[in-house]
Image 1 (tube, rainbow, N blue to C red):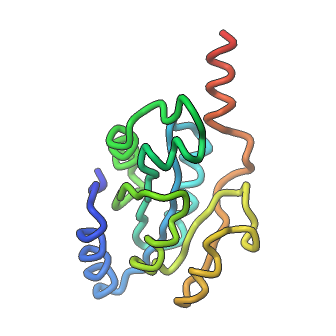
Image 2: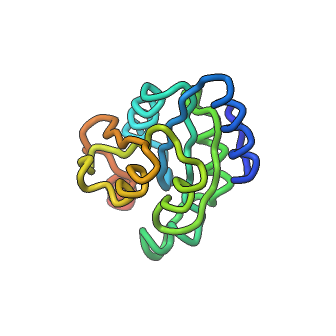
Length: 156
């Protein structure tokens, strides 16, 4: 199982991984109701580097991004579920609607986003480029979503 860590601890672990010659990828998201699209996204991110860090939005940022009634699960539960995935090495909970600050602190070799983006439309791309990292689009086509799952559940 992956480690759920604070940002300070993550930076220590990442420094050790880099010293051992490992590359680091960062993927991020809400991960409110885990579905196959999330799994494919995270497995794709894992293929981009030796170590996969997953940043999970805190509850406050989920409310700001997704609106009333979200998140369905609290940040601790969402982090624990993501940490249980074999492709994940570290999980960190972050605040804010983007991972810009985390990118500037961690400086992962690659920042991974899902296929609902193109490299050119990733909001944090200028940050990643500023420190010499790269942006990768990973996962399968965006035809899975928590919003759709919730709608189907409500319809039943």
